[in-house]
Image 1 (tube, rainbow, N blue to C red):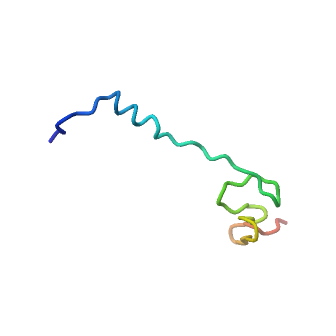
Image 2 (cartoon, rainbow, N blue to C red):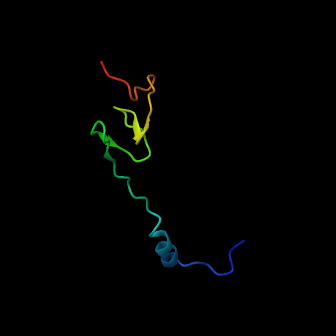
Image 3 (cartoon, rainbow, N blue to C red):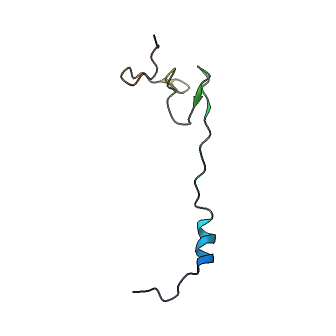
Length: 66
């Protein structure tokens, strides 16, 4: 079954013009200075936000590398 009023290709493409995804820009970890995505833990220091550090030895997050 087809819709009563079909939407044109141009109108569909104009609507989809705003659907593209922009790449997130990594910031700098204030502790180690390495690039860190927002809302993620730094792989070197385990820093997430002020007052919160995460340590996951199995994944190598926030542990000293030998």
